[in-house]
Image (cartoon, rainbow, N blue to C red; front, side, top):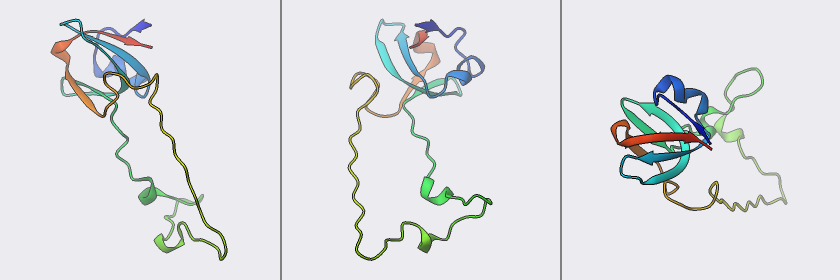
Length: 111
């Protein structure tokens, strides 16, 4: 574990998207994925917020037409199976986005 100190946007930015352990002043430990530090808050497990279907581009940078996306040919079916397992298993902090006030954070470690 590598400590991140001081806890600020500048020191955390290189570690965005990486797993961290947050220890609060009351001793609570929270493990999650560092998303960002914004306006005095530490944000974990935040999704990108970008709809990839709306930002699809061709190699020359032009947007693909909506009707051309996902076109199926006759006689074929597309099937997908997705099994998502959170990093290090389910635990505190992995239920969804979590915003922590920096005043509550005692220590922040990069895992």
